[in-house]
Image 1 (tube, rainbow, N blue to C red):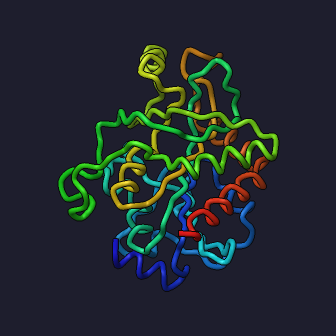
Image 2 (spheres, rainbow, N blue to C red; image 1 turned 45 degrees about the vertical axis):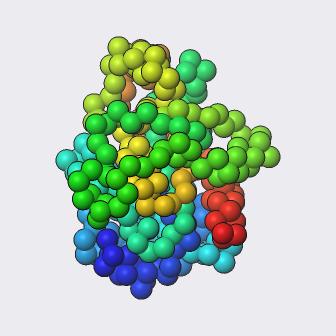
Image 3 (tube, rainbow, N blue to C red; image 1 turned 45 degrees about the horizontal axis):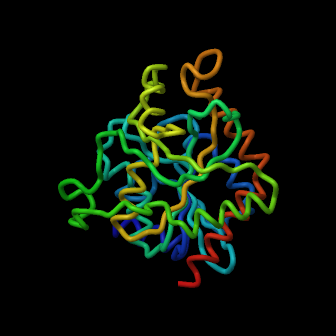
Length: 272
């Protein structure tokens, strides 16, 4: 990813922070203001553009608190057939460019009866059920083999999101996020299993990227938008279009909160 990082730096500037937008999170770009520059991933040698609806495959650069933030509008997934090191391409290119931290976002299924579609959760821990690990083999270019994932989701960054939510009166619960490979939604039996394992939200992304980020020395925060109730916990079926619509509406309504949270992350890493 070194050459890709150089190409992006020449257009976007050197990043202090990176943000990866999950399904439906595109309205967050508007909340951050006008980008200083942008790049289509298809024009970056060595990078692959996502093919899933709701993932644009664009990287925008914003100047926040006098620092540059790269925002990846879309990500790759294991269910597209990519190996885990490729799924983590945004993490790898940010690390190669010298970023200090990353914010991962995603749509998630809620596994608590109290979860409401359109609500938000800050990720405190994860259960990686994808069967994939980007540190296997030479996936990260010979990086650390055995990565300590205790505190993988940075406690200081997590607390900053909770503080900002509390200040604005926005409900924000902590989540233990189960990462699954997808693309099928879970069965009711699988939801019961996830709950028994200690998960209270489930998504088809984030877990692999978090492992890669910690292996490469990036601090991690993650925000999930609860798009739907897990199978068997709500009424009706599950549909990707409905998931996108629910997340887009929630993110658009909470745009100022999202922007403020990113700014606080910039403040936290600029002091290092």
